[in-house]
Length: 292
Length: 217
Image (cartoon, rainbow over all chains, first blue to last red; front, top):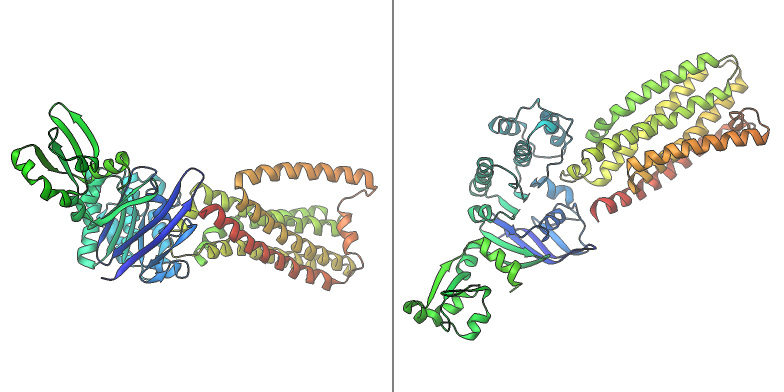
């Protein structure tokens, strides 16, 4: 499968934080969700992809082209929606559209106008007067109006109401399904990622903890409730976030497929109960339980 | 590049027209008594025509965090800075042409006119280098700090100038440029313009690196 984005060994050292060895890839026509707690390096990673931060080490290729040598060509094919919307606040929505249209080779003014209408954005309104949600909509309108092949989004739904959030996520799904577009979206709202992503990467303390297909992660990770003595010592050692309570203990494992055979009897006897986990639980396991 | 030029050109137009009108008014009010000195004052306006709009445009860019926005577009930082640093060259060119035509038209004495032309060219070469320095300082620090520095520097040099006038025995500080250009051929000052542009280009290269370091590191 064609790779739309390949980031290899990205490293960036700051005084108080180091992003280390970030390697990611996105196959064409898929959505990769980057999940991590605040301050884990999501925004730094995305800033590097947009060439807004220079990595100390590592390389980035998009559409088979090196970012350093083909910045302009690559950005023409990328739609970007940031966590914060930086626009000239004293300028009108229509001015902003005209201004950015000069730089995108495939700018579609008709599409921009129709998206403004669809998003209830008044072209004569000053950007500074728009609410946060409306600014995000403007960013989406700009990002979609130059027919990108890859959308890069940095926590685009943070602070949005559920209606707008759902609307934006549906648009991304349509972008993938109808236009064979690829999406790289970062978020600490795991519900968003569960809803749309095909692949998921967890980033914790500046390092990629896991990068795999979402379904694979969800089938590998399970929560086990077990009575004392129901699991052997090795199995218990491999569990994360182990908590003891009146009826036994609970822990999260990322090796469920390995363990499945050895605990079948205990499960049948009712000594072990297996429960599916969501991506929140996986993130908490990484943050509290360290890297695998 | 054209978009960035257009976005910032308004500041230059506004200040340029205002200051050029002021320079004409000053020339008329002093035309009988001061002649070469007024050439100094007139072309000294160049500095303000270039620096005030540059500072204003940059202040607005900082206020709206324009650079992070521009970085999301298929646009190299070098192109943005080239556009911003082309405007002062255009402003100086227009001001020089304006002043040359103005003095050509109104100055009747050929020797005074020759000195005025040299002073205008000398000032233009100095102003273009100063403008480059202002860009460098803006990118190294930020506009607010630079404005504070310029106010202090302005007051300090004014004070220094007054002391210099008192101690040197020269009654009029504006006679200094006249003394500098007197007896020298005009081509020297034309060469100085090119030297100024050369220095400005070197400053431009450095300004890109400086801005990249501040924005992207």
